[in-house]
Image 1 (tube, rainbow, N blue to C red):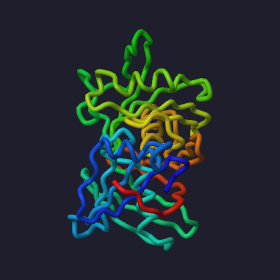
Image 2: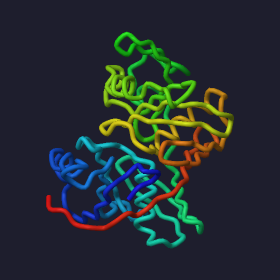
Image 3: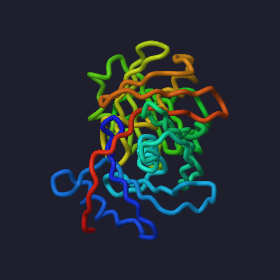
Image 4: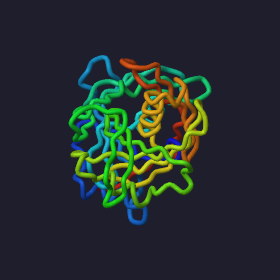
Length: 265
């Protein structure tokens, strides 16, 4: 499945344990395996009010706490193309999902956390902007957790943004003990941004759902954006809505099934 080209394999695992990291890396290899940005591993929910429990693994085999486009694809997978609402359980709690009549899928991905210790990000105290040294390059970032850690840089033009060079340096920066997803945001107006994301454990992807949420909520906190924003990513558009402190971020966009098959692991 994919959401804006951010692609996944979705496995209904039942009681099977997840594959080991080496197997996941082999499956993620686009030349010798299926190829994907993340593996979505579905198990029976332990919460009686939830429809499914899901785990997320990056292409390098490392676990991820959350995945916005992945949650939307899981909702589409479970909905069987019907309009409905679902509750998706993960290690951090539950996500509410809605499938609209027009086929778009929305998820309430969670309440943003700006406190450095909740990201986690090593800082003496909470600040609106942090200055980092990335091997001699000084950069200003905003940090937030949307179920997983994010840093967002504002740039003049995403077409020339140093995603390939600064992305991996910031992803594994010493101040991010669990690494981080790195967003490069160009503000077009209060209701429109352009975005590229270097995802932790995967590299740059065509679309990152939690990255879109991180860019919008940090932009709202900075007074740059409205409460509802269209996010243009290389793979297409997402809509992000956030009403402010203490409320969840809603993420809306397409979720597409590509094919079904089997693989020996």
